[in-house]
Image 1 (cartoon, rainbow, N blue to C red):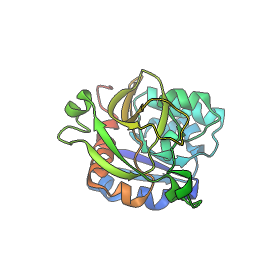
Image 2 (image 1 turned 180 degrees about the vertical axis):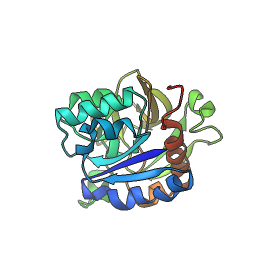
Image 3 (image 1 turned 90 degrees about the horizontal axis):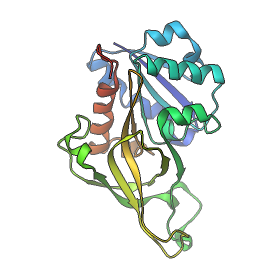
Length: 233
């Protein structure tokens, strides 16, 4: 099996260190790994046809029409596509074709009370719960896990109903926020696209979150589940 790791974009998500956490797992499971620092490889038809899994950690950044077309074509043909947090759910904001492919887009991460904010990333670190759905309790990626708590960025996600939600998180109503009722967002989801499988985990802002046993289990199982299968999806 061949895995392609595409990493870069905003350095706050530590794309090199974050992806390297999972390279030993891929190697242990028999993957040959190629690492690229931009999405340019997505436009390489022959290379993509030989790729069984794409692991993307590319926050924001830009992608050309040819590159996103190559990515969509590869996933539809059976290449798995997975990642976490902004590396996949906040990539290529200007590309509607990419947003349609992944099915969910980061909108914001609500902050602490304004008087407690100091201007750093920690302003957005909130305690919250990741709640498994009924589907998630039986799905190979999340089966056997229970709801779990984190203190990190809590993603508010805009999404469509083609995604299969394995876990959610709920944003509460706070006096300093303008919304009037709790908002539930997908926290972990899968998506079938042609013969390909997509897996997205919104937790993963920092290395300590990626090393959380629950988050790491979800990501590692997602790597295996998304990988190209002989029978497609």
